[in-house]
Length: 258
Ligand SMILES: NC(=O)c1ccc[n+]([C@@H]2O[C@H](COP(=O)([O-])OP(=O)(O)OC[C@H]3O[C@@H](n4cnc5c(N)ncnc54)[C@H](O)[C@@H]3O)[C@@H](O)[C@H]2O)c1
Image (cartoon, rainbow, N blue to C red; front, side, top):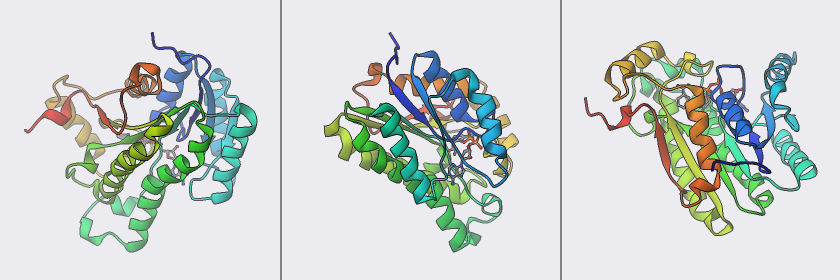
């Protein structure tokens, strides 16, 4: 029943084979979606090379540089989507950034600059991408972002990223309310802790993972592919009645009080 054949899906946030976005792209592709990939460009072109090689098996029909802080690149990305596909069905927002210094120690020491950077890249970027994507979702669509429990509860060291995730989760609700009449659904997936490039910057991430393995109802944490499966579901017509929600894919950890 889960069939994304004929759907055009733009996936942001693939950095390497541990990226959650990579798990999502693989599962969307397995369900039949046509994939477009964006990557964060660097001066030496290393990220482009790495992501191009990794995603080759999915034969992406779009492969574009998109730093969400670069207006020109955001515009060029959606212009390319318009030209290649004429419309967009699925937008995967799977990116975040905070300075390493702001992901450990006292939250009250967060700098103004660090706060602005984290909120701009990790939360405002969903608004900016939704702004560009909404007019291309002419047959309705599904926007999906990635969040974490640290946006709803205090998790040691998550600090400013927790504030960014709280803003991101509220973005989901405001966007869902606005875009619902256009049959565009907006949801978040709150994933359990997974070892990735981004999560390695959070102080004590391995302790977090071990704690989840001991306490979560399923006695383990989750994989990128499990998150990808939930994203494929939310992208599909099976989830046609679901919008504005945060779906926990965390082996059940969120329900526990102790
Ligand atoms: N790993 C976890 O434990 C976990 C848990 C819950 C939620 N998440 C969320 O999942 C998402 C993906 O993270 P991940 O853990 O897969 O790590 P990752 O490092 O693989 O992915 C983060 C991505 O963000 C991109 N990025 C950073 N700054 C950018 C910018 N200015 N413009 C465009 N892209 C930019 C990076 O290039 C990278 O591809 C993030 O939103 C993260 O907060 C991760």
